[in-house]
Image (cartoon, rainbow, N blue to C red; front, side, top):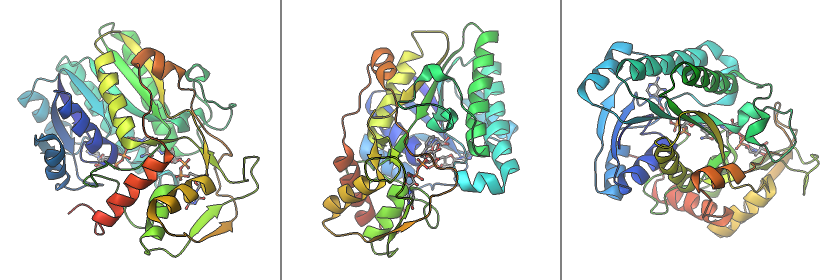
Length: 337
Ligand code: NAD
Ligand code: WQD
């Protein structure tokens, strides 16, 4: 298929581009490079043998985005482009609503205008909120989102579901990612966070490289195996492969379908830290801090639907996730340049 990948130079998008190209799909990337850079395209080429066609376009710019649709005929879209920092979304919510909702509406309008009727959307486990027992099941629907970022994901899911009700030819797969971590095992692609990372594994990586002196563990009094928060971590290459299955699934059904993408297992903060210590061969210092506002104790996916509908199961465990993250950190001390 000829696939438009928005946000394709970003962390998950770039890994997905490699998997799509390696599976024989054609990839055209649109990204405004707000949170990624142009050199990612060379890295994608190194891994797949193909340099995807690239447009430096902001999806908020309807006219420029329309040029992309005029110049290409797409079979499907995978929509990664978006802002993703939970804390920042509470400080500048308008920017998040504008980028993640208005930008997406431009894309959906152009898909309609140019007759593109298959889309895979990057949603998030955050849409479950804190109302439900684990494992989180797709049939729960939505919980109360606790931040504007999460609300933009929920709104996009609702918008796409409504579009499917109005257009019987549309196929939308709404993938709810759990916690993607790790890097391509070559060490050539990976996550390059801006500034001090908010997320656990990018933060640990900077402790391992000596850039930060200790991990702040947010709370050790949760009702979990060791008192620290439990999450469902998924290797980014497994997640990328799930997108290849999802885009192929789009050809087999009509309507909107929500699917969790996780490992189905939960690991605590200290378990992840210890796996990372094993991967880098060092003891990594940590200190216990108060709970982080908005965090829940435990979050992991029910993965039965992904297995049943997409025939998808993860292949990479927490040790592999940490080993690959560390390899990327060592090989790219200045990020992707
Ligand atoms: P990322 O920031 O690495 O990638 C997003 C890409 O989108 C970046 O390259 C950025 O430059 C681009 N972008 C942002 N706004 C744009 C715009 N207006 N026009 C064009 N390009 C734009 O993030 P990621 O981790 O790869 O996440 C990809 C998607 O998955 C996002 O929608 C994110 O919300 C979602 N998601 C991520 C996680 C996670 O933990 N990483 C979890 C759940 C869902
Ligand atoms: C994981 C665990 C923290 C940092 C977020 C978004 C979610 C999704 C993925 C986009 C928690 C603890 C963290 C640190 C710590 N993104 N922690 N010290 O919060 O599960 O999910 O990213 O959709 O929407 O909310 O991920 O990596 O921030 O935290 O102790 O320095 O690590 O308290 O228990 P989270 P995370």
